Figure 1: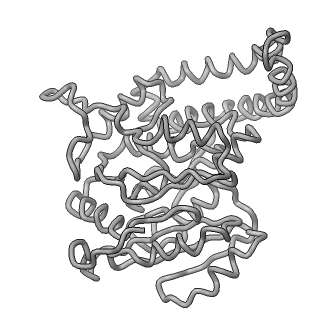
Figure 2: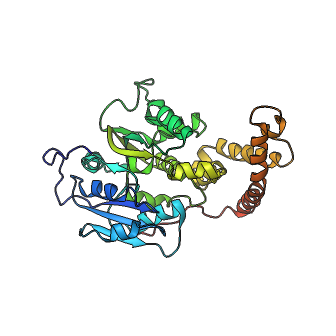
Length: 358
């Protein structure tokens, strides 16, 4: 990690409390370095909240051995899953701001201070995001090791500022930029909601009041629940951007991304993302095209039950048998999903857990 510069960015101890939330599950390999980076933040005051989701390795023993008054350790009574554990972090956090940090990632010492400088200067901003360094570990799956650095190193660069005065200027060309959330939401729609200008949760700083207004992360999703949350924030709030790399995001073989890709657990995330957006009447009224996208997606899943997919149509081609077998194995889960989606759409209950005002 880079050495802290305690003079340049240290904030007064009377500033708003920031909760650095570390959701953990079997993270013994990286957790010490992650927590150390949280405790080395130049911004004060902070609390470091560690919420463990039923680890079976030495994670809990490692974090429980820490003797620092800024650290709190909570164990869930039952496994909550990825989004569920993120939600527990938000519920338990005492701070006015939520700063996520994953168990295998590292914050540079000035990360929180530089993000809080923008947040406190602009109280209208719901979320601040920043850039990150990527660290590809030796055990990372080959496809992830190629794809993420190539396609997701700087996701914000694919977006432009929808401004009347500078319609083609990059929105992120200045440190400490404040951005119109609705304009960015419209740009995401133009890309079919397949890309996001905001990276993973450790790259963000979020006002806790945002969760009180919009609800928590969508627990029906396995991988892209953060993207769905960012989209909702963009629709209802303006956001801020710090154009510096302020943390390290690791890519390795035991990451949630690698696991979800291997098991295809996130196969139906797009449906639940679209439905999560439509759960807000304001978004549904403003963008009825999302309804059409949802219906088209459902129809394609329904048709796949009776029509051969690409794998079956190309059995003689390279990888055809493998694709066909993979698709056949997915059929029971696809049938289960379609039943759940059909039941859900009958009355469309609230999809985002609520955060009670305290």
